[in-house]
Length: 253
Image (cartoon, rainbow, N blue to C red; front, top):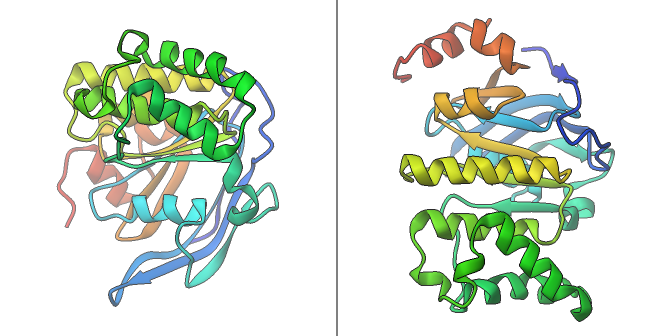
């Protein structure tokens, strides 16, 4: 399949992002004797939100970890505005599907992120308050983070990543197993991050969510990139037959 190159229009924030474009070339990764990511190439530029869409087991989560530098590819290259994941990881945030809450208060989880990064103490209070307000958790600042609901914990995880003001947030299925109300709150928070100038790259298997959030879509199946297109064109009619079956409701083998 030819390399995918797509430069959509700038998102609502309208700011140049110092980590874009993300260029992935010939990326492959094998684990347990199975090819999880198979010769994937694409380039994404200035869209506010890229959705990596595909069924469970498509390789979406592994692709995010490779782009963040948590995993090393067997082959291929990843460049963030010409730099490696190792050189740019401090300007990225990654939120897993099941984030770990520290044994601290909600505010304490946010403070921990600032202290680990070594931000000046003079900035702590203002950044924590901003993140609490953005996540809708200001009234729970003193509450133990581990007593929050699942949706609240996910909002805290997103706020904990965003408090460091990353240029890019990588979100791995952030609303998996959440109810519609909690999902709506997470999606609203993603729009807040976008408005503040943070680029979002997110995985999901939820077609409805992809329709709501995507500016452009990367469709994966069995570790291979089958289509990369502007969201409007993709959902109007994918050019790849497997992608068309998936958004039509088929269960892919």
